[in-house]
Length: 113
Length: 111
Image (cartoon, each protein chain N blue to C red):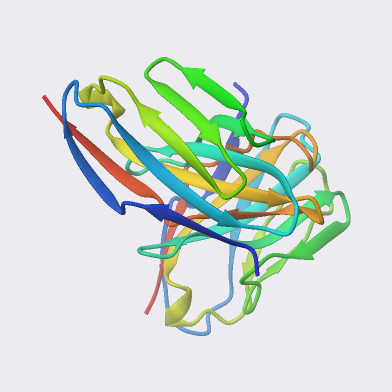
């Protein structure tokens, strides 16, 4: 089944403890992106990647890191999480950067205490 | 600054009561405007893409239209299963890697 898989689905952590949220797609898509969703603010783009080894900042990249060493994987890294990074995170992919249709994962609900 | 604003924030309709959702945008050169549907606890699901003013797209009870400043999502004779949050997003020609979303409109359709 074609899909974007995020793990974990739920995560509770403490301030300063490094964490990684994984994202994997099995559709051979070139483009991948991370978003956070907060009430009243909608979806905001964190980072995106147009292809392997090519990443760029979205609108809210502070406090986050990404890497794209393989086409299928695009992990989101929080080196030192803070409470203001408590949010619902979505990974998405599409065949090419100019493609219209993004395929989203099911989301990761992160709570930083 | 590129910006997307959706209205209303929330909309309650009776089954069969048609209405429209609005998406106003400011972008430096529009490459595409997108509509997504999001159900609680799930990721957004693609509905439509519109590229130029005057364009219209339809899917079942939904019809999306586009002008130079805004887009409308018309819902004709909605059913309870149409209840969801509807998201609008724009992609600028100058930076196709970035997608800017509005805050969404949460639609509730009562039987």
